[in-house]
Length: 109
Ligand code: I3P
Image 1 (cartoon, rainbow, N blue to C red):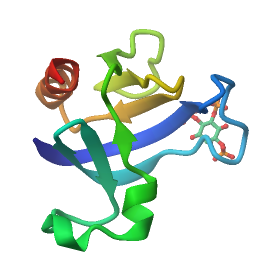
Image 2 (cartoon, rainbow, N blue to C red):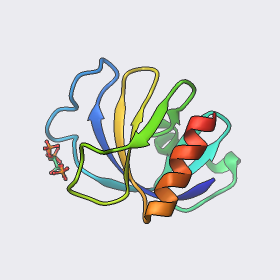
Image 3 (cartoon, rainbow, N blue to C red):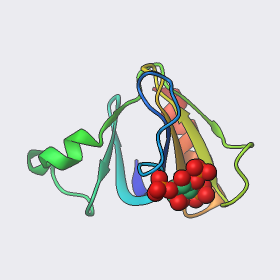
């Protein structure tokens, strides 16, 4: 699965709130492949071409949990992704349908 997702980091690997300065929203082209959600700066490219920067933004979703971000109301179609290493991301999808589809696909892994 792939598509545009806008990401905000809410908690870091230690489970602590992401500090001010790194809490902004950033738009990515997301590609879910195997157990990894790649957040790429640009549109889909073949694997051979994944850049260092894109690898840094990749999120391991094994044992991660995706839910609707019911406690976040500033933007629509936002899901919350909690990873097994205690990170928390808010991910805004372009539509309600897309949000539901991402939640379903992430939790299936
Ligand atoms: C954050 C940025 C986010 C905002 C966040 C700010 O600043 O303005 O857009 O989240 O508010 O801290 P910075 O880029 O300096 O980290 P919202 O868009 O959700 O308001 P927050 O600290 O209340 O999460």
